[in-house]
Length: 308
Image: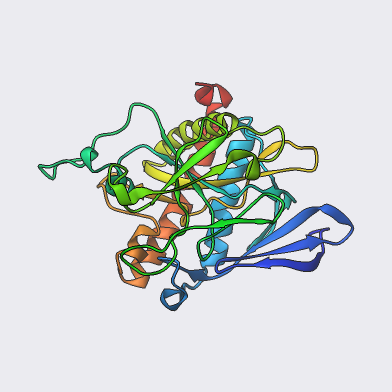
């Protein structure tokens, strides 16, 4: 029985709820839901039986592994089949993507990476870091909750652009580009913003990149123990009460693209491709089962296996 008691509901999204912990103001309980979503379209959301349990197990296995490898995570411990406790963080309004293969919207932004012969995609020599500004309805919000601007209307959909690609992030100004248009196209350019409006004091994009690159290498090795190939994945970071950068939110089978030994897709990408829900659930269960096996191998092999 958990000693942590759920308090006030802080946030409810499509796939999870976040609660305060009674008597522990710096902790939260994250509870998974059975919903599976796509394309930021609530009308396409479906319920997948047992998804909450599978997602929680996957997230906890991944965070336990990363924590063991020295990654600073908000995750503390699993407390039920569908819940875990984490440090309460101030989330940074960024979505980080790490890629081992060029897939999806990456090929729209960088079409020259596409294989013209339709052949097998090549693997990057090192993880490819990309970062996007998180927005809703095109509205850009600063770290302290101020609205700092609104993105232009998409020329195709007639709706505001959301989650723009941060093309240039090494200076005090960030250049934002359309996430689903070739970066060389004129209509790709959106606007610039101040980095100080988004990044918490003492946190740099270089620090975020270095941590994300390390996580990408660790996950590649861990998933390879499960005979799974990591194509790409998304993560989010937050800052704890002491100002420390922490890997936050969740990492589950919605967070990445994965292929098995037969190069069969095993992630949420199946749902995006409108595959049968039974097949999707079986793949989610398959991934969780293989991660359990990988965790045993990693634990018995020792930390040295993952030092480089």
